[in-house]
Amino acid sequence: MTTRQPGELLYLDYAATTPVDREVAAAMAALLTESGDFANPSSGHVLGRRAARHIETAAVRLGALLGAAPERLVWTSGATESDNLAIIGAARARAHRGRHLVTMPTEHKAVTDAFGYLEKAGFEVTWLEPDRRGLLEIETLAAALREDTQLVSVMHVNNETGVIQDIAAIGGLCRERDVLYHVDAAQSVGKLPIDLSLLPVDLMSVTAHKFYGPKGVGALYVADRPGCNVEPLFYGGGQQRGLRPGTLPVHLIAGIGKAAEIAASRRASDLRGVAVLRDRLWAGIRDVEGLRVNGDLDGGYPGILNVSVGDIEGESLLLALEPLCVATGSACNSKTQEPSYVLRALGCSDAEAQSAIRFSIGRATTADDVDFAASRYREAVARLRALAPARTAA
Amino acid sequence: MTANPYSTEVRALFANPSHSGELDAGVAVSLEEQGMRLQLSAWARGGRIDALRFRAWGCPHFIAAAECLCARYEGRAAVDLESVSATEFMQSLGIPVEKTGRILVIEDVARALGHKLREASNSET
Image (tube, rainbow over all chains, first blue to last red; front, side, top):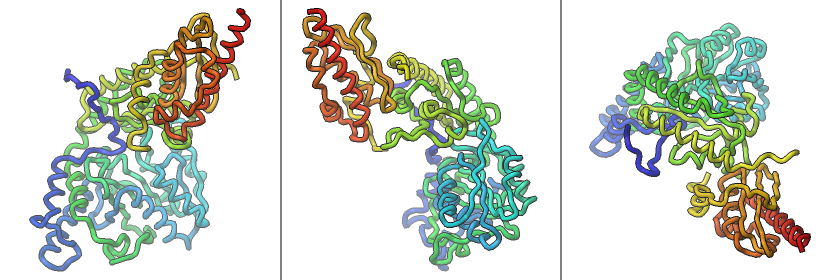
């Protein structure tokens, strides 16, 4: 049992971002200054070629993690850009064949807002509702696909609930219907096994900072297959075959490469570790009266546990939980009290969505940490319930 | 989300709401509005508030302002409750302007309680 200092912060928000692995940070730092390979990797001189080798190494490492050929990776600034490039770029590239697109309202904002933009631009988008766990039923997708459907985008692991979509089945159906399939894999790369040499996925978005790499860098996988094309969103110096021009940030790309290498070596043990801790956390809170699990406790990614109690105000719960650093299911510090659209899509009431707390566990989390978190959660719920008046009759 | 949405005062009042609870046989007023719920109860004698307690369901600013109200008005003349203003809590606790509607709920309940205490006092005399 470790002793916690009063007010000592406890980070349980690894689904939002992870700290940079020390080895990754060291690898990046070595490339930043004049003593390192800082040059522009597009330059033809010796230093430029040295910098370019770091890019190539990173592509090999990330490709190995994904089961993808290194040359199929396009470096971006992160998953948001990758999602936009994939969705808008593919829709534009295939607009001459049809303008129907399919996604879900439970996708990340980077996806839903990209589709929203395309709707305004004249594309037709079908928004598929999930079941109560947040999963897409394959029959629902099959019924939505049409002759003019060009793109389906359904994420791998949901960032709020941790539910895992069956991307093999979804991609398989898309292949049968000659529809491109994009996967936002921001929450699964480096955490779950992914083999793009086997999966029927055409486009996959990746970001480094969810698997102990730096913020500001990601990648888009583009399958080498007829009809799998995306139009660029930016124009410039022609780097990356013109698909995403701009001087490549060597240190960031080396960072994602190193993070990918580390993830590949410890992914299985990381997954076992977070599963044990998630089960321990769940055991510590499961008998809280009125507790609801948002997601799929049995089949979801075990690094995320999202729970809510409908009679507790979310913002107060978040403050009462300090020093825990966790995510809430509402944006109630903003001017409008907006419950999570993902949780509402799963059938949560506004009150349940607003009281939702997402615990997300990472490499540095310990058994003592989750015991403390469970204890803190129980105390906070009890304290806020004791404060609340009875409801008045409507 | 601002860097620190809660003032030191709000944090302290939220963490230690020593006036939370309900007074048996006290004069009480409840209101549910703006997504917030508040109940105030008071014991008063001779026009003075002997004890003032609250129960609240709402955001930290709302709970802190309810605690602040009780701490400030306990021991004062009951009639003072009828002129409670949300502004005094907004300013002293550093509550952001977008929470004004919620703090007005506290103003409404406090004034209603003051009115009810006056009526109760009148009926005794």
